[in-house]
Image 1: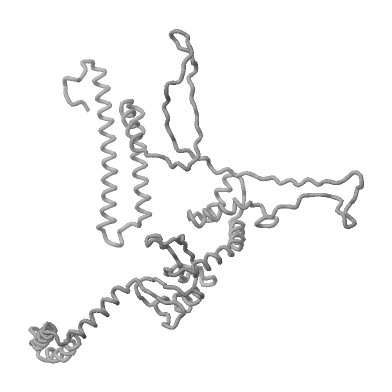
Image 2: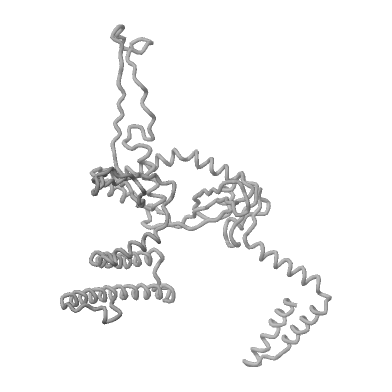
Length: 400
């Protein structure tokens, strides 16, 4: 907007153009303010609203993405119509963009002028500097077919057919495959597994994405590939478990997960047990590692089976009715809970109380407790007061 009327032009057409630009900018700001107010209302609702009205983090982020996308679309339209605003925002983006990771490959594109001859004297131009800029690019996933050809060779001189011990036809052996006679390569199966378990992309959606490329592969076929890969990765998983159990201390915890219950038409509750090791905050040299194991429950028998062969210190969450804290003390490994500080404080408090029974301060506390127990009840009938007195005295005696 113009700050002073002295800078306004006298031309009516220019004034009309400036007025239209001002109105357009005001409309854009009003729409942006409305979106920001809506975003603020959603944040307040999620923070201060009732539990039933609160949105999940993923749902809230999804709404914020839509609002931010709408704001960016409006700003892009304004930039196209205003050259000065476009230049200022371009400079601002260069300041706040940051540096791209150094490990990414760089592909340099050099843009030369059309002519390298001076337009004044016709002399040859030489380089005195350059402007360098970086942009982030991505090559979309490309599906290809690998054709493996294994030529067969034979000798024209002897023309052996392979009927005796000497082979008549020479051919290179076929390379090993993850799925014998199957279509996928190891790279494709790895991509399916990472998309499913790391990026939470279900198999039926991956099948739809392949169908968009003209590749018709059923979801059950993808599940078959994942099963074969799981069988091949089992030795690596067993080795990881062995390495973890050889550690001096481990952290273990279990969490609920819904499991399909065939025949009942609904799910049942299962448990994923995690064994983790990470001593980096304490100067440890062992690399961090974690392994997951499934169990239908959280009882002590499952913890005993998962931790068989482990003889170090087990760290867990505060005690609950769970397998980790229900273990017998005669187990081959020791359980050290994260609430050991509270247990120690209670033990120290009990020890100090027992050692200070003859101290004047302890006697003063006991006398005050007895006087408090002897006070009559200020409310209620005499019958209720009489009923409460023995229980109150018992509690006070326990405290003393």
